[in-house]
Each structure stands twice: as structure tokens, then as C-alpha cells.
Image 1 (cartoon, rainbow, N blue to C red):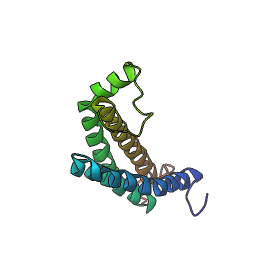
Image 2 (tube, rainbow, N blue to C red):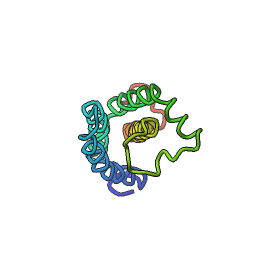
Image 3 (cartoon, rainbow, N blue to C red):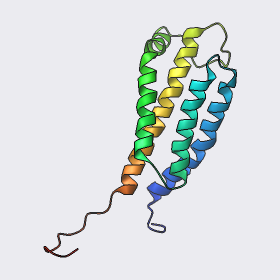
Length: 143
């Protein structure tokens, strides 16, 4: 343990540091999207969750809220994701986004699932950080 932190907490904090530029890039590439504001907002929310984790100030409520929004949003487009994968289409093999709305929606669902998964990791980490070790039973009247 280094400074009271386990290797697990140090690794997760490092992963949060790595995810900050990932989510920044995800937000930046949305500028050419037909509906960029909602996507930028989603990726910036995930960036804030990651930045708080990187700063050792994880917020499980924020992370959980972002995860739930991402999952609910992904559920609204899940049929495209399943349809794209089920039809044996190359949903993720091309950078070209023109002309294949089903593949584009499948990629969008993939992005939302990445946000939800990372925010789920952030919730678990925040809860683990906030848990105090259980102490032995103390006699009544002792603090």
C-alpha cells in the first residue's frame, strides 16, 4: 500500500486519468454530427466523472446518473445495434459514416455502452474508496 492506497485504487485512478482525453476526443469528434450537442454533453459528463476519479474525488451519484442516462439512451437504439450485429454486417470495420444509418446507430450505442461501463467502474471505485474498514466491536459508550 502506498500512502494508504492499494494497488487497485492506484490503477483505477490511472485509468481515470487515461479516460479523460478519450472522452475529450469523443466529444470533439461529435462536432460534425447532425445532432452534436446531446452527444457532446454525454461525453463531457463522462469526462467529468473520469476527471473526478483522476483527482481522487469520485462521485458515485454523478457517475451512477450518467451511467443510467447512457443505458436508457442506448436502450432506445438497441434494435439497430442488435440488427447490425445479427445481420453479420461490418458495423465497426469502417470509419466511413455515410449512407449506413444502421451501422452509425450501432456505433452510437457502442459509445453509450462505453460511457455506461466506465461510469459503472467509477461508481464501484467511489463506493470502495468511501467504505471504511470494519472495526472490532467496541464497548458501549466508547467512540
